[in-house]
Image 1 (tube, rainbow, N blue to C red):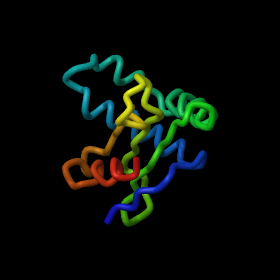
Image 2 (cartoon, rainbow, N blue to C red):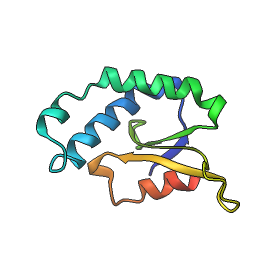
Image 3 (tube, rainbow, N blue to C red):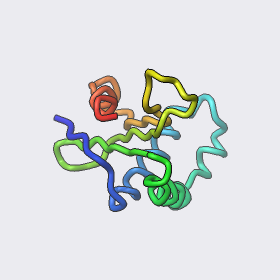
Image 4 (cartoon, rainbow, N blue to C red):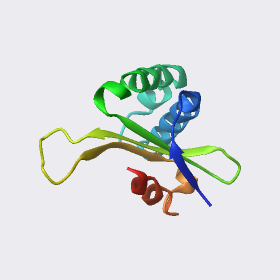
Length: 114
C-alpha cells in the first residue's frame, strides 16, 4: 500500500533521486545518453530546495508517495492555475514515479491529493 503525503524539506534528497532516476529510465531513448549521465542528484536537490523555499509565495505544492517501507518512490508537484481558467484552481507541473511502481495506481493516488 502506498502512502501519499505532503513533502517536507527532509524529503528533498529522495525527491531528487527519484527525479534523476526516472529521467534516466523514462527518457533513455529520447534524450542523449551523455545528458542523462550528466544529471546530478546534488544539482537536482538544489533546484528542489529553491522550489520548496518559494512554495509559500507561489502556491506550489509537492506530494510524495512512499512504499510500505517508507521509501519515497514518486512525487507530484504543481501550483496555482496560471491562465485564469475559472474552473481549475491548480495545475500539475511534474509527476515522476519509479519505473518499478508505475502502472500500480501510485500516480493516481498522488493526483487525488492535488
